[in-house]
Image (cartoon, rainbow, N blue to C red; front, side):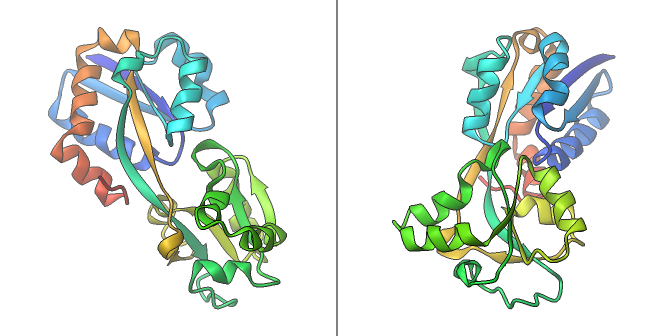
Length: 229
């Protein structure tokens, strides 16, 4: 049995984990293990035994490349992307139906400024040159989380927050936390990358799993979890 250690953030984890489950079932001599979470939790181990590194955005992969000299940069590949969304409370007491509803006075917003969401809300408004909207949105920010997991915990424990700006994949992975509101023309898409390490280049199972993720079967799995080509 040949182990494959894949490291990355929590957002793509549900799709990556299910992909590894399907892959392992059909590759009896391979055992892909997905290890996810904030970078500081797995960086040291990834330097030692990482075969595959995956990210939650391009800037995140660039950061990994600076911290993990064992990444084989030429294998970095933008795999799939997901759209921004708004999660509101199940009964939606503030009647949030559109992204611009977040700009109304008194709406409390939860955002993430880290991982694959650095600058997300600013990009959503900034692409239209909406400085007035940026000012209104900033006034409504109730909490800035360092990563999506911290944001999710805050959302679950602070019921006074009205809206959670995040990616659709988090609502799909946690269907009971609220309901999604489409961000319409303000939608921002960001992709995830996969990359082999130098160790992974010498691991036949790692190379097969890397190819599997890029395949039609791999895409079907990711699409199920809210990812798109």
